[in-house]
Picture 1 (cartoon, helix red, strand yellow):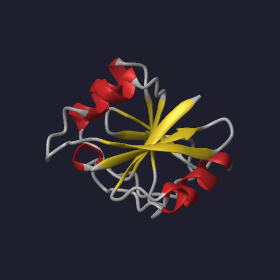
Picture 2: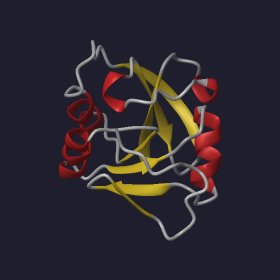
Picture 3: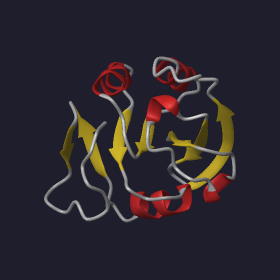
Picture 4: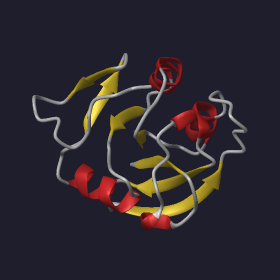
Length: 126
């Protein structure tokens, strides 16, 4: 599977996760099966939340891990079959560890669904 994490700067697994999906200047592309960073893609977002979902779909992403995301972006990703996970991790490496451990919750309609253990994040979608 192929996924991505919106980040502030391109530093692979050391990249700091952007707290707003739509305003992230870069996405770190992931191999979610091997739990590793593959590449970094510039979003050229310029503050626009609309570029992410079409670009990620064109890159074959099926998973997004993010700190915060608006309902519109969440809906657009879901329409393209992309699963969105919430995290409060600061870095890509930590988020990958949480994914591996099954500690990331799926976001749907701005709501967190992953059992009752939400210790890895605060279930926010902004």
